[in-house]
Length: 113
Length: 113
Image (cartoon, rainbow over all chains, first blue to last red; front, side, top):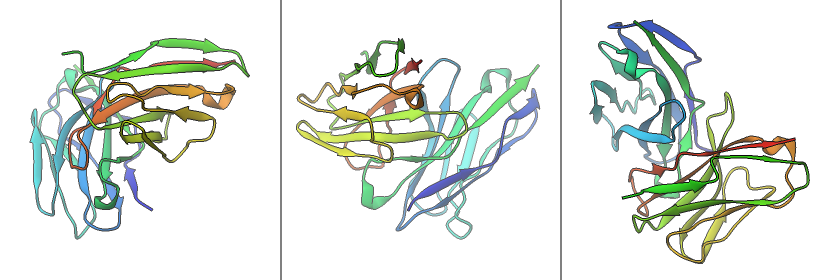
């Protein structure tokens, strides 16, 4: 079945550091890929998405590129801020399951001033 | 625009008790779903619905029932609560098929003693 694997956390960085959170997936067909973010005490919200190979999703300084050859969708940001502290989830939606999302385990990011 | 609302925010139950978690959306979305979030396991799909009168099981449906009598509402029923159902529950909605953004409610934190 479909699955998503994220790098183990938690991740702690200093402000202005470079961020990478790794995400790899297994899916049949051609999935769409997403990054969701969960701030403390809130529900998840969409951060960015990509729907086909080599697409780059971007939002709020975060980027991720859909790499079909390595089945990856790594999240990057060049300079993190304290306000980026949150849990980040990688997810996929496989074509055969329509809207249904499969999530990774989540990665807790803490950014210190 | 309220988006996706969930009630209650917190609930404590004793083993064997039953209860209903409420979820409503005002975006006229066809697709609605329930997830549970447990540490280190990401979000797991419990049940979902593609429209009024149509529901289906997700990854972890045992111990839960759902119904969808209107487009707006998608309640989740715990029939006989067990400590293993201690979790944070999220409701989400989106347009059907995809890859459309899923909108999440703020969550219900349930403890079963």
